[in-house]
Image 1 (cartoon, one colour):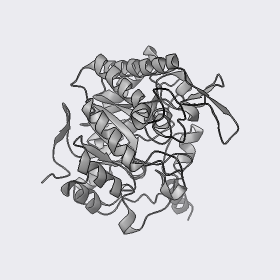
Image 2 (cartoon, rainbow, N blue to C red):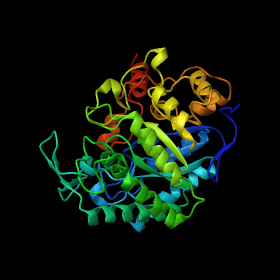
Image 3 (cartoon, helix red, strand yellow):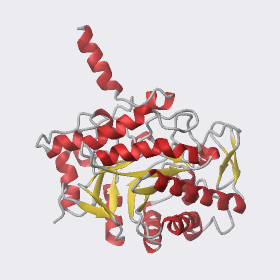
Image 4 (cartoon, rainbow, N blue to C red):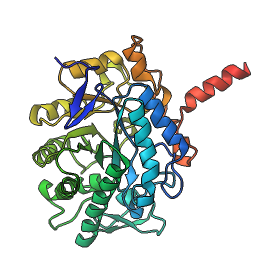
Length: 371
C-alpha cells in the first residue's frame, strides 16, 4: 500500500514524499518577467517545509501569452539566471522543482493589445480575441519548446504544461472557446492536437527521461465546455505519447465560484476534495500518475486519497500560502487541519504585483498588536 511520506518518483525524478506545491500565481516577478528575491525566498521556504515537489507558477512562453505584469517569464534567455536561483534553493533544501509553462491565450494581457486564441470571439469585457493561424500555432508550439530548453538550462527537474483554468491550451480543449473547423477543432482528437504537438516538441528537445507533466481541467463547469469524459480520453492520448503525470484541477474564470478551482470558504467534510469523482474516473482508465489538487486541507483526507489509490500525489495551493511549512508540520506529528480558511484574500496582493501573502493571517496579527 502506498504511503504519503514515502520516497517515490515521477518518471526518472525521485521525490521525497507525495506532496506537491501546485503552481500558484505569486505576483513576485518584475515587469520583464524576471524573478524578484521574494519568489526565491518563497521557494526556499517551501522546500524547508518539506514539500516533495514544487511547481513554479505559470511562466509565459511568449509575450503575447502574458496574463499579468508581475508574472514570471521564460520567453528570453536572459531570464535563465533568475530561474536558476529558484532551482538552486529548492535543491539545496531537499525539494525537486518543475517549471510550469503557459500561454494565456484569450486571457492574456498583451502590451501590444492583441489577444489570440483558438477562435475569433468577443470577450465579456468587449475585447476581441483573434483566431490563431496554423503558422501561429506552430510558433506557439516552438515557444513551449524553447521555454523547456531554458528550464533545463536553469536546472529545473522537469516541466509542466498548463492546460487548465481557461488559458490557451485549455481553450483549445474546450468547445466553448474552440469553434474551429480545421484539424485543430471539432472532434476531441483535433482539439487535443496542439497538446500532442507541444508534448512531442518537448520530448524532441529534452528526450524521454525528463519528467513532463500537464495540469488539466477535470471539467470546465460551463455550458458547452470541456467535460470529465473528455478529460479521461485526452489523458489517455497524452499517456500514449509519454506524459509523465497529470495534475487534475477544474474550472475557468467563467465558471460559477462554487465550481471553480478557488472555491471560497471551507467546504463541508464530504466535499473537501473538489474533483473526487473525476479522479476516480481517471484512475479507472489511465495509468499515468495522478496529482490531485482542489480543496484538500486535512491530513487524514490526503493520506486516505493516497492509501486508497485515488491519487498518487496530493497537490496543495492556498494552504501553503498561509503555512509554507504545513507538510513538515504534518510529518513531525502535528496533523491538525491546515489553518487556511480559503477566504481568497491572498489573490489581491498577488494580482496587484505586491506579492502573494496570507492577508487573513496578516490582519489577525495586526489586530493582536493593536489590542
